[in-house]
Image (cartoon, rainbow, N blue to C red; front, side, top):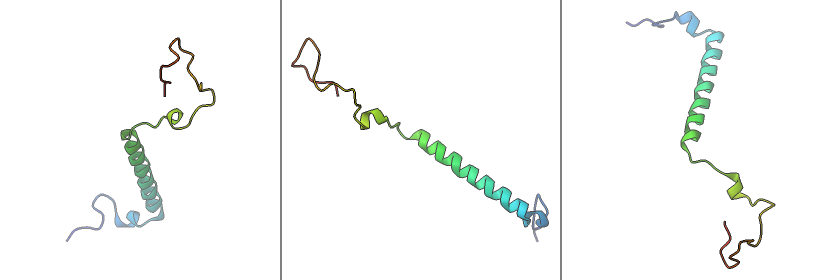
Length: 70
């Protein structure tokens, strides 16, 4: 036969305080897992996705037939 609460008494494990505390720990864990996963994904540079307003439509190079920098 094993006791109900190995480290803490069973009366504490069923209390509302422990339920709120375990909920906060679960949310904190989910937040840090999400942050860790987003750190592993490649960075998104919004300047490459959306065209900027001040981009030149034509080159001002001394080589006018050169391709535009994308």
